Length: 246
Length: 99
Image (cartoon, rainbow over all chains, first blue to last red; front, side):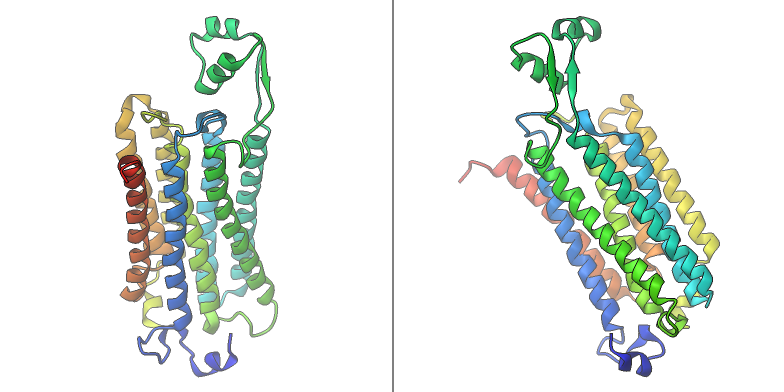
């Protein structure tokens, strides 16, 4: 960031540019617009291959909606925390700014923790059916993955520890690519937020006049939140919905 | 402070929006467990998540208060992404093997 820019423009939203708008803010919005297309392509790929996996596990076997709902709630609250940090800065409440920025970073890290837990539980997912014959009598029918395992098994007892990995099936490949890229975005956001938090202890670096530095980070953070809103509905909730052919 | 900032929501309004977002998420999860809704679940969830998306973009990202050009930049990206999603799905659903 050029020092001259700040010295010449007290109100960073109103630079003397051809549009009258700040170039950095314009660039951020253009980037977010293009990032929409990036995630759009990943979501489209996931949807195209939905129900096309030749072997399990399938979404219905591994998704844990209550756990993902909690992580979604955490990310939504981190967005509120971020916007409160920005509001505190514009009101020159630097301590409030620091508290809200720290809580945003903590909630972001919690979300990543949930994702690590989810990835690890998916990759260690296992099925242990004592007796395929007994299971069929007990529950009437199997879910798809259990039925597939039993029909391919040479013995009545089935046990598998393969888990869901990116190379397991099309679901694994598209799911990990999409959510992995989202997780990478969140991680970058946490680094950005922590950088601003540390900079706030350096005199003159984070001030109400230089609020745009925080505004840009906030825009990025809210963007990863809206992307997750879409992922949660389309991938998780629709993922276990019994669409024909899925 | 610039003119736009004066109209930004207060901390209390930001908190209310967060509560609305949380309630919508809770409704989404509840709807997910209502099996009798069948295919109706899909449009309901799409509307609810679109509402959440719009709330965050308008109030937290300040699009409602900022210059319209920012809205055009972002919305054009969202629209293009949606078109890409439907185009790819249509291509793979109806187009494979036709050429």
